[in-house]
Image 1: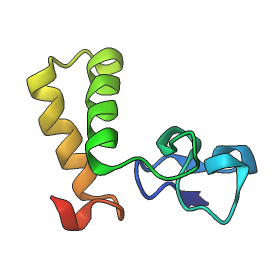
Image 2 (image 1 turned 180 degrees about the vertical axis):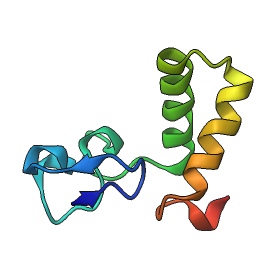
Image 3 (image 1 turned 45 degrees about the vertical axis):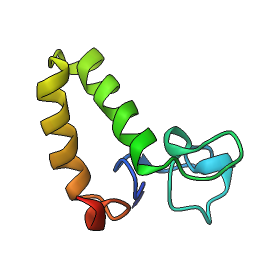
Image 4 (image 1 turned 135 degrees about the vertical axis):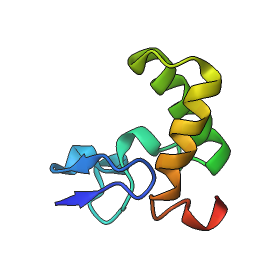
Length: 80
Protein backbone atom coordinates (compact mmCIF):
# COMPACT_ATOMS: atom_id res chain seq x y z
CA UNK A 1 0.00 0.00 0.00
CA UNK A 2 1.26 3.44 -0.91
CA UNK A 3 1.74 6.03 1.84
CA UNK A 4 1.85 9.81 1.56
CA UNK A 5 5.44 11.07 1.45
CA UNK A 6 4.49 14.16 3.47
CA UNK A 7 2.38 12.76 6.34
CA UNK A 8 2.48 8.97 6.09
CA UNK A 9 -1.25 8.50 5.55
CA UNK A 10 -2.15 5.27 3.72
CA UNK A 11 -3.51 6.00 0.25
CA UNK A 12 -5.74 3.08 -0.66
CA UNK A 13 -8.18 4.76 -3.06
CA UNK A 14 -7.72 7.32 -5.86
CA UNK A 15 -9.56 9.94 -3.80
CA UNK A 16 -6.90 9.61 -1.07
CA UNK A 17 -4.31 11.02 -3.52
CA UNK A 18 -3.87 14.72 -4.30
CA UNK A 19 -6.67 15.75 -6.67
CA UNK A 20 -7.59 12.05 -7.00
CA UNK A 21 -4.50 11.60 -9.18
CA UNK A 22 -2.84 8.27 -8.35
CA UNK A 23 0.40 9.43 -9.96
CA UNK A 24 0.83 11.91 -7.08
CA UNK A 25 2.73 10.48 -4.12
CA UNK A 26 1.13 12.78 -1.56
CA UNK A 27 -2.37 12.75 -0.12
CA UNK A 28 -5.40 14.96 -0.26
CA UNK A 29 -4.55 16.36 3.22
CA UNK A 30 -1.11 17.54 2.07
CA UNK A 31 -2.35 19.29 -1.06
CA UNK A 32 -2.82 22.97 -1.77
CA UNK A 33 -5.90 24.04 -3.76
CA UNK A 34 -3.83 24.15 -6.95
CA UNK A 35 -2.75 20.52 -6.50
CA UNK A 36 0.81 21.22 -5.34
CA UNK A 37 2.11 19.67 -2.16
CA UNK A 38 2.15 21.93 0.88
CA UNK A 39 5.51 23.43 1.80
CA UNK A 40 7.50 22.16 4.77
CA UNK A 41 6.38 25.15 6.83
CA UNK A 42 2.70 24.68 5.93
CA UNK A 43 2.76 20.94 6.65
CA UNK A 44 4.64 21.43 9.93
CA UNK A 45 2.14 24.04 11.14
CA UNK A 46 -0.84 21.89 10.10
CA UNK A 47 0.58 18.81 11.82
CA UNK A 48 1.34 20.74 15.01
CA UNK A 49 -2.26 21.96 15.04
CA UNK A 50 -3.57 18.45 14.34
CA UNK A 51 -1.46 16.82 17.08
CA UNK A 52 -2.43 19.54 19.56
CA UNK A 53 -6.16 19.15 18.81
CA UNK A 54 -6.37 15.38 18.52
CA UNK A 55 -3.68 14.06 20.88
CA UNK A 56 -3.95 16.58 23.70
CA UNK A 57 -0.33 17.75 23.54
CA UNK A 58 0.46 21.34 24.39
CA UNK A 59 1.91 23.23 21.41
CA UNK A 60 5.54 23.02 22.61
CA UNK A 61 5.35 19.25 23.06
CA UNK A 62 3.54 18.91 19.72
CA UNK A 63 6.51 20.54 17.96
CA UNK A 64 8.81 17.77 19.18
CA UNK A 65 6.34 15.03 18.24
CA UNK A 66 5.80 16.48 14.77
CA UNK A 67 9.47 17.07 14.01
CA UNK A 68 10.34 13.53 15.12
CA UNK A 69 7.64 12.15 12.84
CA UNK A 70 8.58 14.39 9.91
CA UNK A 71 12.23 13.22 10.07
CA UNK A 72 11.01 9.79 9.01
CA UNK A 73 8.97 10.97 6.02
CA UNK A 74 10.58 11.05 2.55
CA UNK A 75 9.43 14.58 1.76
CA UNK A 76 11.15 16.15 4.78
CA UNK A 77 14.12 13.92 5.71
CA UNK A 78 16.65 16.29 4.21
CA UNK A 79 15.14 19.34 5.94
CA UNK A 80 15.34 18.15 9.54
